[in-house]
Image 1 (cartoon, protein in one colour):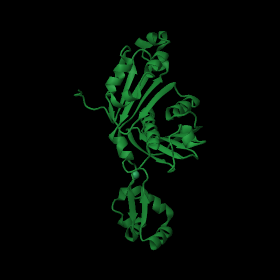
Image 2 (image 1 turned 90 degrees about the vertical axis):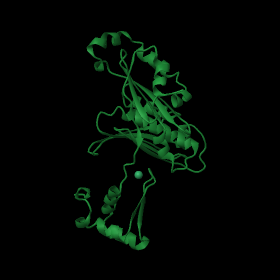
Image 3 (image 1 turned 45 degrees about the vertical axis):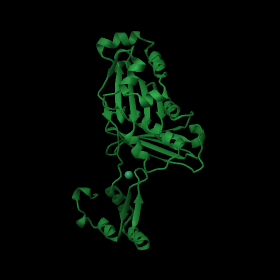
Image 4 (image 1 turned 120 degrees about the vertical axis):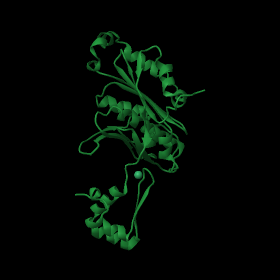
Amino acid sequence: MHYMESTKDTLQRFLFENISIRGELTQLHKSWQAIIENHDYPPVVRDVLAQMLVAGVLLAATLKFKGRIILQIQGKGALPLVVAECSSEQAIRGLAHYSQDIKKDSLKNLVGKGQLAITLETENKTERYQSIVELVGNSVADAIEHYLVTSEQLPTRLWLSANDDTAAGLLIQKLPHESVDEENIHRVQTDEDGWNRVEQLSATIRDDELLDLDAAEVIHRLYHEEDVRVFEFEPVFFRCSCSKQRVANMLRGLGEKEVHSIIEDEKVISIHCEFCNHQYDFDAVDATQLFSDSILPDGSATQH
Ligand SMILES: [Zn+2]
């Protein structure tokens, strides 16, 4: 029986004190359900999207600035698009496109000849870094590990899992020796087997453990013989970054003539956000307001 607060919808960071390896564990429940609730995703699509979101949370935790990470798989198969985003505050959103006749298969076969694009973006979008690699491997974890190797990142391993209820993942990453403080450096340098040992211990994780045990139980189960420092967990939540204001800015970009001409034909412009299923409607009155700065309700909301 558990009296502990549930660790679902959290990011749990931990550190191996003497081996210069960091770890992260995340388990998504409500945040994940919120993303799929208005979509009728078949299980195979749902699993890939879940694993992409979990990977997004695990990788976003390595961001060194305020912003977000966007993982995107693109191809020409029955699963041509999967997008997962996570901000540095652990706000997640995601979506997938699929064909109706999709059947369970390896990731590579589902996506077809495809790519994995990983984009890092600062909060104000002033800086953006994107790397695109060929989609390799049979799972989301394989594809991301391949990306991490080719982009010469620190050695990193991921384990990702999903079922109807929960999406979960574990990450371990080897840190450069420079990140170790003076008093521990000797022990780190002499424990050359540390990385292999932690990798092997991590690989014993079973899907049901990763999905169902509390984060603290998973960490204890895997690493009880190691010296692990566990940090306060951080919440992970669903939040869509769409807004009426953003849609309004986009419509302004189309131009007044174009917007009024659509409204003449359609009566209303309906813009649907695929991430959260919210619909933004603009009728003739809204359209007039769009192009009339003087009557916009909030000066800060206008674009200049
Ligand atoms: Zn939205």
